[in-house]
Amino acid sequence: MKISTQKINKKLEEVLDPELNISIVDLGLVYDVIVDKSKVKVLMTLTTIGCPLISLIEDEVKSKLKELGLNEKDITVDLTFDPPWSMEKMSEKAKALLGIS
Image (cartoon, rainbow, N blue to C red; front, top):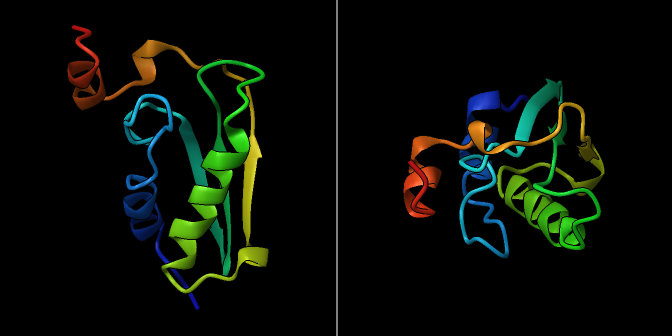
């Protein structure tokens, strides 16, 4: 089964950061989505190194992508801090929700 990157990104918009209650996509935490046949790799970061919420976010990413018919074994979430996250990566929507101009 071939799933488009667009559909995956749409599902990732439903994954909320547990502390900020804002989409990980709007926060700029998703760096890349790679689709290879039925396998999906999500390259993402966190707002801070050592964030204890990575397992919650990773579980939610996998849960949302399974709604597209993917098997959990075909979903990989890779964490990187290169480049480091910064507020400039946030969407205008996220900045508005946080009161940042």
